[in-house]
Length: 386
Image (cartoon, rainbow, N blue to C red; front, side):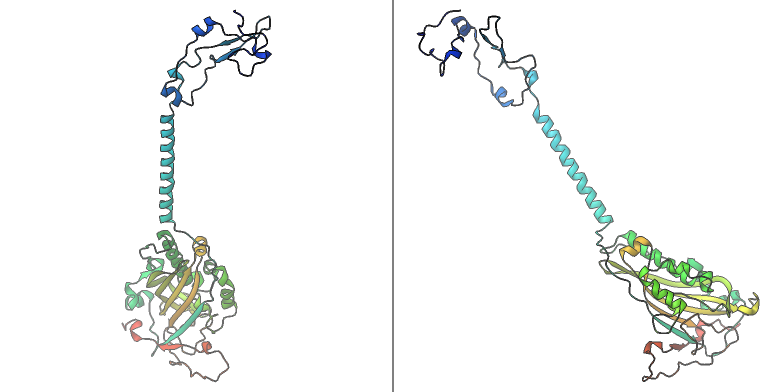
């Protein structure tokens, strides 16, 4: 290798900074002529993610056995190799398409569930106490008796359906804040309450109250229990406000097939409450408890119940109901009958001793709501004479 042409004590020409560390690095004329200089193409400059070839180290450093530190330069380090350029466009486009599809699926799911299950704010409402009104219907003459089937056939209940089949559910439609499924649930619970509280033979005859109690909102259980244990005609604690019950010491069912007619209506009263209005008339065939099962002396007893039942979202979830208003008309009964506890019907051949409510004293100390309610029973509601 040719020596340097520069003076020994001066910096070699073309080497920046000079110094002894560069004196052993000499480029001879043959090396310069052999080097290939090529400008990078536009494609090569844009391919910023070109990966390094493990077999192409670029600059290789080596040393001779004499330790001169000679450096060899690979003049092919910048050669264009098409197979080593990544195609970023295709991968980026596929990723963007995947993101768009994912967003579309999430949006579609949100719209679907939002339409089927509207937003349900937490319920903070407390159950109201039940307000109730009971009216005794007094007959003008003696109560008609006979066989249950014959009595039903000759009366207004001849075309009524028997038992739970008479409590039909209307078509359910969604409201502003409640889905169709929630409206259906409210109607179903209301129907269950009507069936259990007025058609279940064990409840009607006073054997149990558990089926009715199990459906009530927990906030009303204390009022319900007091109405059964210590009934009072104060507008809030009468047994008949919650269910139909006859005095088992006096009355028995002559026919378990109670006739029913009526309707159910549902409305949204607020963003968190549905209200179902039930208006049903039930007709019972009764006989004296001491008759020993003979139904020949049966008579009909009619009860009309207008109920308002409310449901918040907790009630719908737990299959419970809040009974807020109960208006009951029942007869034939005597106007002097105690309406706080079990109903005391007039049976076949019996007459009402009082057909008008007693006089009310506005100066009396008793609550005004404790006054007895009574009205005459229409003869059209009784079986026609044979």
